[in-house]
Length: 252
Ligand SMILES: Nc1ncnc2c1ncn2[C@@H]1O[C@H](COP(=O)(O)OP(=O)(O)OP(=O)(O)O)[C@@H](O)[C@H]1O
Image: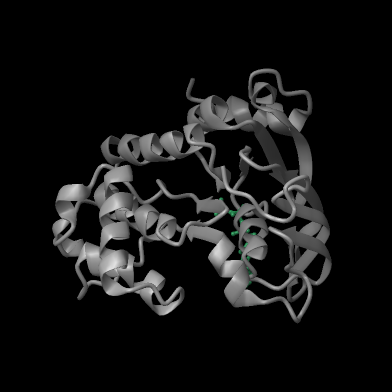
């Protein structure tokens, strides 16, 4: 298990976070926390602010108000050390964003060499290790276009893991995949959870959220509307969550 100076503090904490895009209030007092080794799933209707909340954690979006602390970094402050923050936080998006002209090994070794100044040999060794973790060791020298969508997404996860993050963020990572490729990516995330990785995921895969998440945050119109253990998906209490899980979102 990884150590840091804030081991008794949550790894991620949002307090009363506010965010607007022009006149549109997208986050209206969002608060939640994620402890070390915890898996938190953010669910909710399209447009409820899930991705924005996730993007604020890694400061892809600046907040208008409230407090965000991630691995000890005050993300809401203008003087946050972005380089240090991004070393602690791995983020994987729906689109894989692998460089098409680089092999999978080169894609993975790039950031450890450029950001962490790791020696090439060591970075290659690391690439092999993280690819083995996602079951793709044999694709080391392949180019992204030679991989299926599911394999590319697993390579993108491996690339994040190579930076040895303290927390991983997943933003609807299976949404662009055909159903038959979704399972292989979810399996990798499941294994990471079993290995104790702290994770925050925005997902539409309700069955998966139910099986893997320690806690669920249900967002509705920019607010955390209901939160609790995964069991809230089987016994929701608010009409909004009842309606949400009752509209075919809950697969199992
Ligand atoms: N950069 C932006 N500029 C303007 N509006 C934005 C921007 N990003 C998001 N929004 C708007 O903010 C609202 C919340 O978007 P967000 O992507 O956080 O929702 P979401 O719950 O993740 O939705 P989905 O499940 O469809 O991805 C939406 O109305 C969206 O159009």
